[in-house]
Image: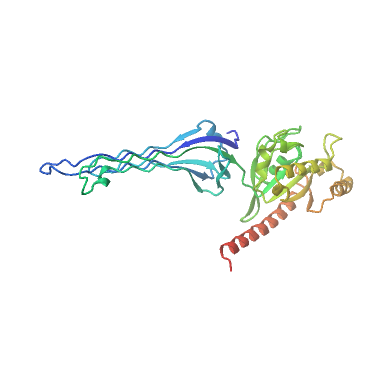
Length: 351
């Protein structure tokens, strides 16, 4: 199925049913009085996160969702039938925004997360509510209220612990294939991935993390060049960014130092928070360099970038260095998860 990460839908909750005007009619009871029942509640619309989905493609075919209306009340104080609430399934990582105001309504990140997006109308009151000592035969009723209607913009941000960042043909898809069961397309000619791929990296028993292969970015991406900001947002949830660099580019004029600097600038333009995210430098395609030339090439790139963070050298094509890199990532992620859990516990239980 085609990967779709944005969609706009219209949701219309059900209207509440009107209250009824009715009078009791039974043999030998000539003055039975009012017995009009209330209207039923209109159905509401909920979005629910479902781990079995990974795209918003279904919303390209159905863009309007209408919930059931409540039924009108009837005699004998019978309340009308309420509408059955509508549940719309969305992938994990879906952000829900009001299309008119841009306001964020909710963020569905865990399986089963439920978000009310359109409230059903209330049922009206029947004439039985208006009986009094001075008005024995009221013909007044209250109509049901209309259900909420709104336009929603859905944006999918992939849920991954580690995001692969780099220029097209840096070897991100090859690395993901080498360390997980994911099978993004790779080939022996230059091209770029067109949509994100997720892979589960298993380091040991009950030790794993999710890695995302983000489509290659180019200079000017934050302004919309190439695939632009459409896929930069998929890095927003990652804890660690792996910045892959091709140490032996096909184009002799391509400068790895300049490509890293340019991409770092694009991150800053898109989001200061993302630019400040923990980022590791991964020098890829070592198999294309003679063993004796590797140390000097690596030192040249690191010194040119004035890089002070973690640096790893790998060959995604042969697997060289990949296991060590994944092990270090797992250790760092476990530390970050532990710190996050402790911080959350402190916030929930302040001393």
